[in-house]
Amino acid sequence: MSVPIAGRQLMVTTVDYHTAGEPFRVVSGGVPTLRGTTILEKRRYALDHLDHIRQLLVFEPRGHADMYGGFVTDAVDNGAQLGVVFFHNAGYSTACGHGTIALVTWAIDAALVPVTGPSTEVVVDVPSGRLRTVATIQDGRVRAVRFRNVPSFVVVDGLKVKVGGRSTEVAIAYGGAFYAIVQAERFELPIEPAFVPRFIELGRDIKAAIEADRDVVHPLQSEIQGIYGVMFTEGNRNVTVFADGEVDRSPCGSGTSARLALMDQRGELATGTTFMHESVIGGRFASRVVGKDRVADHPAVITEVEGSAHLTGYHQFVLVADDPIGTGFLIR
Image (tube, rainbow, N blue to C red):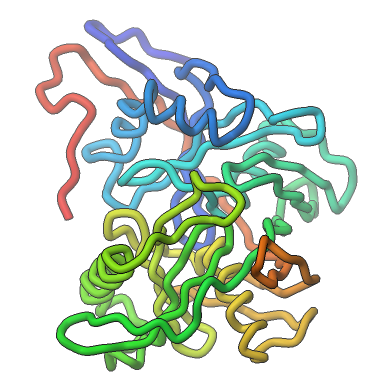
């Protein structure tokens, strides 16, 4: 129930989850309907008209630099049950695996989507395309969500970039967004939380070095462009730095698909074999290549990624008219 607040300028309601430790803030009320016939158009509408709400929910003191969330939208057509526009500390992403898992869990928890059996299919429209997901239901609860991602592919492998005065090789792969993928051992760093600040510095430098030298653009959708994240790998572990120095606490769902595409191209993972991708805090996604495809001139793979989301809270965020901080601030 809403509580009357004198001088209230804005009130937004959310339901919060985490997926393998990574937050996802579902905007459940207090915002207008996002306009547009596609999710990319709705994403542009959010940028033009709702960015103050993104800031309110992501920035301190109501959020933090590593907060993530999404505006729930109508599906593009009757082929899906709902849509989503993802947001983070720097704007709006084209894909978010952990957010998709949390969103589907919320949609079933909130009875927005009916349970049809122990394996309930939910189709979601996201900026990168249409995702078919399957929620595993046990004892009336969502225990896991598996999503089949858009086709994933490698743009380039063995790209040399100069970072910190040294040359290193990275790959660029797509899994709904573009990721630079590099072995952590090239920087003599173990994937442990204590080294996250250094990974943030390196991630920013690698992204800047790549984008200073080349344009990274999806061959079929020019609005999907740029290096979204930098993934440092060590065995089956990774730490992914995305947006403006944001660190994924989960194994990174769309990044997992990008890594699977790279592993497939290198012959490191057989089709159908489960790869347990682990995050910097030890959370895991089960993932696999399930088929082949093609995107323009790029050989591509179809991937599936599975994880679990957990409810963390219900919120009513308020902005009062005389608050000198307004929609907030970020310190990194």
